[in-house]
Amino acid sequence: MIKRLDHIAVAVKDMQAALAIYEDALGLTCTHVEEIPEQKVKVAFLPTGDSEIELLEPTEADSGVARFLEKQGEGMHHICLEVDDLEATLAELRARGMSLLSDRPQRGAHGRIAFLHPKGTHGVLIELMERETAHDPDPRP
Image 1 (cartoon, rainbow, N blue to C red):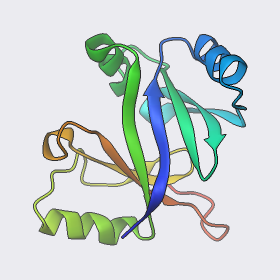
Image 2 (cartoon, helix red, strand yellow; image 1 turned 90 degrees about the vertical axis):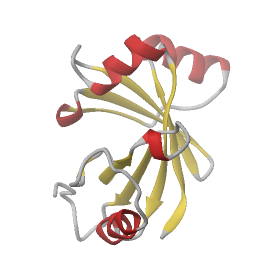
Image 3 (cartoon, rainbow, N blue to C red; image 1 turned 120 degrees about the horizontal axis):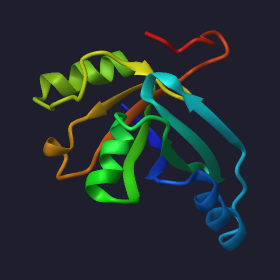
């Protein structure tokens, strides 16, 4: 079911200011920045071995990340776990009584994603991701 920890996401108000800290002070390298209009967010990826740090900056005031920043301030937003088969994993989790934030996978930066509700995971927002493959270039459900 779970393959590995894919990334830890950090919500930030200013992507450039945050990148300066992660790159200049910590010596990490940003390999990719992408906007995901469906989620109203811009993401930057900083590899750290087999995982990544993902910086999230809202692109619109009504996005989930913008609401998170307003309520919680900057900081850890979620952890992402990679799975082989997202639909099978979601079906198994539903059968175990886990609460999901949405019933359908959505497009993420590297594949299809779904989130577990933090009320059922001791306050941690958990993203599940099925990475896209060479045979599945468009991860949209």
